[in-house]
Amino acid sequence: MNKSWFVAGTDTGVGKTAVSCALLNAAARTGLHTAAIKPVAAGSDDQGHNEDALQLQSAMTMEMDYGQVNPVLLAAPIAPHIAASREGKSLQASRLAGLCRGVMLSEADFVLVEGAGGWRVPLNPRETLADLAVELKVGVILVVGMRLGCINHALLTAEAICRDGLQVAAWVANQPGPRMDCHEENLDTLRQMLAAPFLGDVPFLPQWEASEAANFLDIDVLLVR
Image (cartoon, rainbow, N blue to C red):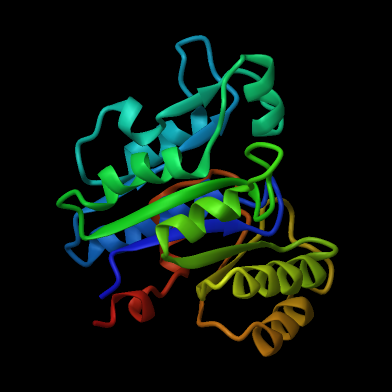
């Protein structure tokens, strides 16, 4: 089977981390050793940690130091390239790819590389996070936030991924807030128009748990050798 995937979202706040944790949980149920890396995170707590990265660290089965899970942490919860500029830091796709490969080459059977924001989030004036995924040459799991505009965002993102030479390995519908109007109709349209395997429809869970969210996912297509 493929071992590593890049998790991208149709926008910021669509639930990439929540879905990534659910995918890690689902993979662990099959007996796989799991790991994840969020190479760039913007938004630090008082302890110098990012909440999304902490969730990934908790959800994976491999023991990894926080610095391995989130090697580049930016203090302000803003666009990474702006946060990096404010801190006098430089973000480069090739360097981030090297950090990711360290985790991808670990003993883990199932590895997720989680992006930040959407597909075209800038790293610097010349590169975006898409360039990181291209450097890694991995399939993309697309998280579609089920809210108004999701069809347009999903189709444009999928087109961009393919244009960049990568494959949408699968996609997940995630409800990041209260159920949207015409949810089923939007979901049906996406299933008809996105030419990629559908892993599941994760509803809004007020008391969110990765183990519960994993119940709505079928990852068998990712585990085929």
